[in-house]
Length: 269
Image 1 (cartoon, rainbow, N blue to C red):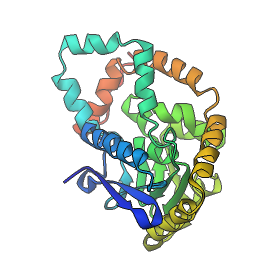
Image 2: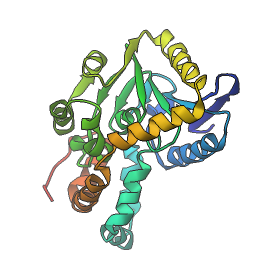
Image 3: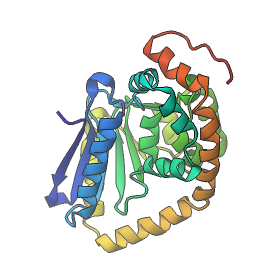
Image 4: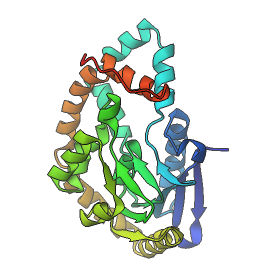
């Protein structure tokens, strides 16, 4: 069973991208990322596909990055691998940061249909879409500071879709954001009952899909240029900061403590 379900609906000119690891709350690991990259390439080439809908299987949109996978990778890593990561040039790190923005960088519009919890990289996946609607059962959070890692996408983009102070509060505290507050802040366009979420997403997608495709893509390209103005400079700083933070002992301790179900012991180095 694929971890990313890609389904085309040519009559409505839209496709759905469903994160499909419900037993792991749709945690995003290497396989899911690879499958998303493949599905996006097919979607982008397909002239019949004009809008994408992103959602999750089961009760979660996405619980974020697969921290268990991260902990296992760190445990299995040898000193040579760790040294190579520590010496990774900033431009390579920047390319990795760009890959974390698959929907905003796509020429076609994306709708996030947030069906449940969307935390850490799950919230960032939603933030990367052009339009966000959410179920009454959804909530959001950025837990990265509680795991000793960085909310890379959010640091560069979240304050572009909600007030700066609110974005800083979420990133620095790791506190939850209710769906009602997300709507009040303008992060979410609409809040719907669970059984109305996907029908409404399809309705929006079909409305967009019925419009002139070049005009839609042109509108997104100019709007995203404004939205992303100054982003490259922000990514440059992010790459420099990542070299220090993500190669620290704390960055290994956070995912390890999560996988071992214990409080982390921070060392500040």
